[in-house]
Image 1 (cartoon, helix red, strand yellow):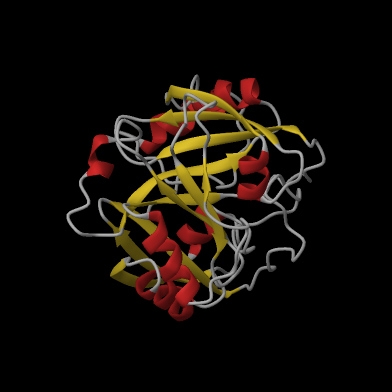
Image 2: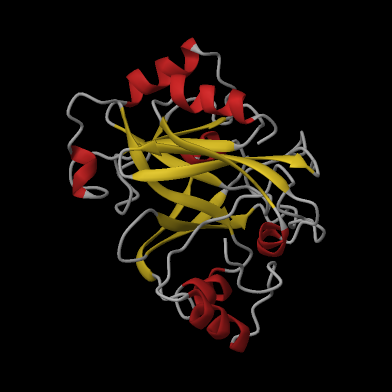
Length: 274
């Protein structure tokens, strides 16, 4: 984020997140971890329900902003899906704070899509232009805990979604190398999908993966249109379009060796001790 204080206020006042910590970090191990020389960062950890998001401001060096013409099928698109108990109330909360739309309005997945029927969703933007999603699960859809609102409107984070250029290739990484489990698939298209992601003619193959706990990862494979732009090859962790998903492992050195043997491209120069 470009300004931690502004983003903390947004996530707190608009989306009911709670700030649980803030640190300022610098030094060779953080440079090693992020692949950014001279990095000095403010990191605020925010909590909603059982899930967390870290908001990171690079004091040095400053990165590049999100391109103003970004679209939902560009490869640098990513969002977190924030679960709500009442879509109408949540949407009105966003309208009251004049939040920028991505979707034209909340959309309900039709009954013709059996895997996702009845789910309501809405895309919008944070202060720096990051895409975010509100998602409502009707009875029988999503995790059982999302049906336990206890009077709250904003409940937690269900997943993070990323466009992929080829589902099979991404499955070979997230499932076969990282060990996540494929838990659901659907193909979304039509009026509702076009107005959800604001991409005309969109037909999206969606694959949901999960580990034993925590939020899931959702692939968005745009079958049409195929004109989404690739991730800039010079992307760095201080660029504002950069997201990173933290996956907890038993031993970082063992996991890194497995990734190295699979010839995965590294950003960190090695395992950092922070």
